[in-house]
Amino acid sequence: MYTHGTSQINKQGHLEIGGVNTVDLANKYGTPLFVYDVALIRERAIQFQEAFKSENVPFQVAYASKAFSCMAMFQLADELGLSLDVVSGGELYTAIEAGFPMERVHFHGNNKSLAELEMAVEAGIGCIVVDNFYELSELSRICKEREHTMDILLRITPGVEAHTHEYISTGQEDSKFGFDLISGQVHEAVQLAHNDAFLKLLGVHSHIGSQIFETTGFVMAVEKMFELIMEWKERFHFTPTVLNLGGGFGIRYIEGDTPLPVGDYVIKMIEVVKAKAADLNLEMPEIWIEPGRSLVGDAGTTLYSIGSHKHIPNVRDYLSVDGGMSDNLRPALYQAEYEGVLANRANDEATETFSIAGKCCESGDMLIWDLPLPKANHEDILAVFCTGAYGYAMANNYNRIPRPAVVFVEDGEAFEVIKRERYEDLIRLDLPLAKKVVK
Image (cartoon, rainbow, N blue to C red; front, side, top):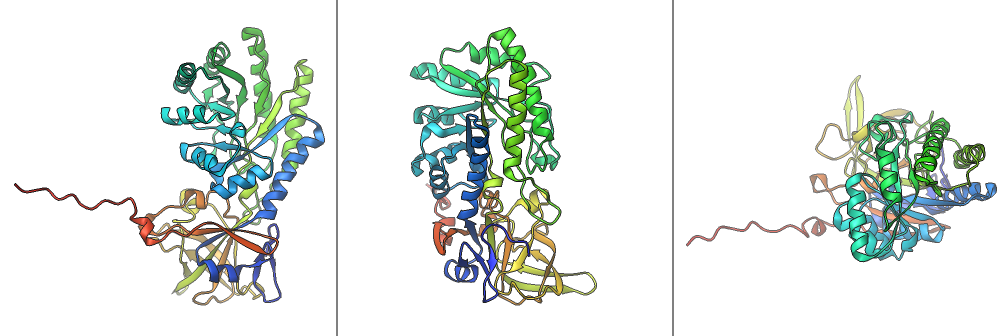
């Protein structure tokens, strides 16, 4: 069994995370249950920050909150000295309610509503990453009406595509995100923003994909950026003070995944930015990055109770669990793969192979297709690893299944940070049929 963070098998043969027995967690909080290893999140945040500090460069590490958002997570990010990347009014509202410092909030998104832009300006957030001309125009209008100056970055599509699944690649030329480089849109956007009295253009943002295991794509993106920077300096007398290189740093989900240590990504980025700035006789810009998955992905484990077992001779053995695509949409959405273990019998020899089925009424609701396990029993606890990113964040009420609870564990203690939904919660916003009044 590959162990992540503080995970280990205790003397009882039970999986333990953060010094807490996962069987005890399942018994106390029920299943499905998301369990987050806070020590691993802390360790990753420090690794990112220390890499920058070792190179003595200005930086911001912003947690990409779309990976997993809740008040406690935002408060932990603040405690760790991280900035915060939000992509919706809901995430911004959560940050406000969590007491997160607004000056360290960056707002992303390809279709921010006018209400969201107004909310961001009124909240006094630190930066808006502008994605298109409509947004640039409306943000300028909103700021002018309020006589408020807003720091912005322009998101560009640099034409660099990371080697990831096609549905989560966002840096290539054909993308819904950002100003296009090839057509020259980005030059027009820079000129408009740089000349705007109420928008302070700090620099540019680029995100080339997700679950990236090498640094080549980041190097290519930086090189493209500096080609643009020299052109902007000559044409518009504008030199960015901030380069946001996005996120996408990979984690290990299954055997064969080979992510780099997080510091290696950062060091390589710094090296190429330093070299290009020196070659072109430019001041070193501040570097921003946006890790999400790499901060919380392998810090999360989902616990399930095993229910029915279906044996199809010479074909397959299905084990069904009490969750599925309602708490982990990634396998159905883009064939994501996971590893797992029986949390209550973690030392038992894996003698059989099972396919782990979710309980939703969809044939595609499969969490893991071929998982080696001991002969499993009804109500054994299955732990599925590396579910901390885009698990709860994408959780849904399909089939009217309540969303799970979430607990943080650290130093032998567990803290519930999101309560389990109840059936009453599912109908809280429902309204009864309004019958037509017959006269």
